[in-house]
Length: 327
Image 1 (cartoon, rainbow, N blue to C red):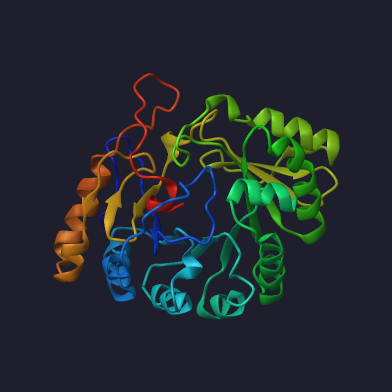
Image 2 (cartoon, rainbow, N blue to C red):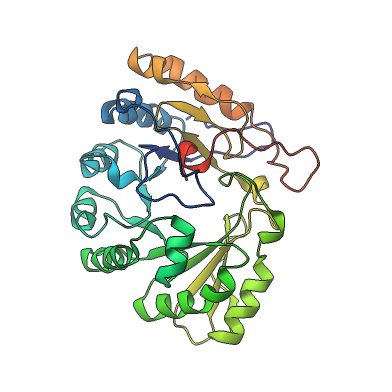
């Protein structure tokens, strides 16, 4: 099988697919308040997405993550999950959601074949939730998490963006909540991609988070099954009650082991979250040109840069915000 390999020897088997750019929150680190969304007619259909996945699978892609925007705003999403799960070679399907609509959809998603679930939750304080997301909704997210647990999802990961001025108050309560509920907490360093103005001084680094958790929750140690090639540094509590991951995109970039490619909701192929160029594969998909899709995938991955260079003077912030790329 021909693999998706770039000039640095990285093999790409992980495809992140945005199914919509629409969202029912307006998180300050992700998107502006007065955003203009794509017309629904511009979105790839479920059949379009599945066709792309079928071609990608022939090139070694076996992991799929559905994102947005908020993917649960896309009507009948369990049908797409079922279609992708039937593609030969696909062994892992995940979803990232803000959880507001999860309570009513968790069971159907699990039955369709979804197994990995990440729910974004930055705080357990209703006031700070509103300040960060510019919407109410904390009780809905909590209800969604518990519904997912009842549906059978295990593990369930809770994603929290670590922004100075907020996470100092929320890291320990979130960690305690996840320990009690059996969720795996993941902190994500604040990145220069969603906010109108990125303030580097608001980045909270991995070592600070670990210090707060060890002082306020319990001692931590590197997880026994920690994979250094993984985006997240994994830690386990010494008492055996849970684990924590930290995705340190700024202080500890994992570009050298990156295995991800991205497909936006309207059919643009991106080889990096911070990519400055895209390839429009929608015409190829709509024409049924599998050879063209295959060639586009191979060329796009071959063209991938060494890394995003956030920490260098050469860094250029992408024009798209996170909701338009796919989280």
